[in-house]
Image (cartoon, rainbow, N blue to C red):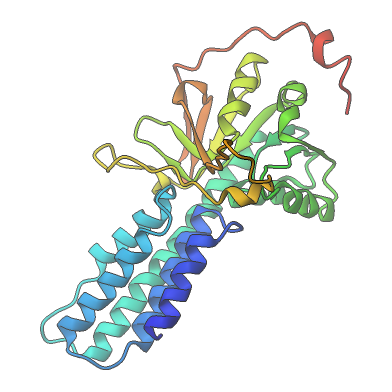
Length: 307
């Protein structure tokens, strides 16, 4: 892999709006594999330093996605070389370690979604926001179990459309709504299920902007709010402050009005107090401090807004 090609791959990761955090982390490891296999012949120490520098550059591409930094950090610490190893052996070691982590990520995703599907259960109406690979897999597992979905459009790029298209292909009854209708329809769900781009040490959820508002609406209407993601998305307590990524304002499609600032922050923070339970590959962690709220009079919503 030439430096020009690597820089192009870095831009691809930085500008990617389709992949979730786990997919992005696996893509970064795949880029490292290609780099390890194709970097020119050089002294072993120089090769190691070069590959570690490339890994560090990949870490910086998506600061809101802890999965990227965690898996790349695991690769850096677990890639062990000896002084007597040849360059070919060092290449092979780097590739093998990255491949192991890619497979571990996939296995964690599978275990996480199996646990979530078991917990959600049969004949449930589930609401979600954005496009999470874990939520998609849970839907696949439950597609023949009476699942019904409420899907938000998830502006500005409306990735909810891709989720709705997949659910339609699986013949899962689906209601597609604008983000602004979250409060109207969340009361018709048995639960809310979202993924996460990161989990802070205290359980705060970093996810697509709008997740916080959905959690507030769910809490107000006594609808459980579940977060399903792999454990390597959890951020250590001593980690540097997490940066919420802001994308181009042009994605909102607004004119350039004089004196008007347009913001397009992609992620928000949902406090742990609004989360009913966290689900990962190790099982279910119920939030013992979660307090239910009394539902509003059903006539306010359910009698006026029907599916």
